[in-house]
Image 1 (cartoon, helix red, strand yellow):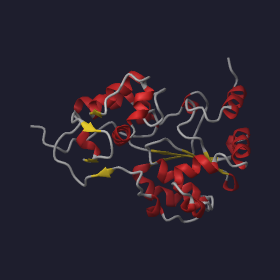
Image 2 (cartoon, helix red, strand yellow):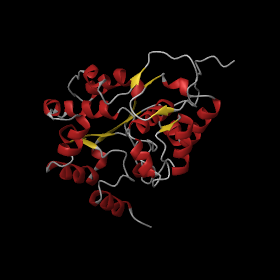
Image 3 (tube, one colour):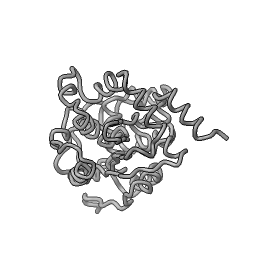
Length: 269
């Protein structure tokens, strides 16, 4: 049996393995805070908040692209990140560990919208078997089920990371994206962090074009690849697709305190 020390050594020397993290942890050493994120779970919001707390927000705004590119191209590649990573795993109990999560129902729809914008990822993930450039949410979930939510692309994978699944891992705070504007200011007070302008982290070109309301069920509607203007997430669900997401992301419902109940807002008769 591989010891936890051997696992940590492997995770350190292979930090960019996408089978272990959703996104590599963000580490605020001076405050001993670790932030864990998953794609399509408010990650841009979380990354922006972290860089503001790390006094890097001005650098992020001056970066030629956006916050995620800064994270990948500057923060992770900085000389200090490997040292922070090593220090964290040497004594994780000394850090306050925070995880930002999202309702699996809304995240699954966001993952679908992302797949429409970047069909090449799904094409690659299925080893060139899925070649459609027009497909429905229903079809997307069927493909994710074939791939498996523990090993598919990180944009569709569970928010429960492989690292968490195979270690005695514990977070002091699970922040649900839906209540982040209420909960994050509380954490800022508890840990003597800066009061951040959360509204500045909410919107970007990265976000999809949502309609304010919907009318009909669209879970079986075929949309073309690219940026689409779409109904709020409940309109993508019927009873069967809700059950499918409950099965695919059962870990996330259970681990992060989300109810499987969903209200279908459109007329069903």
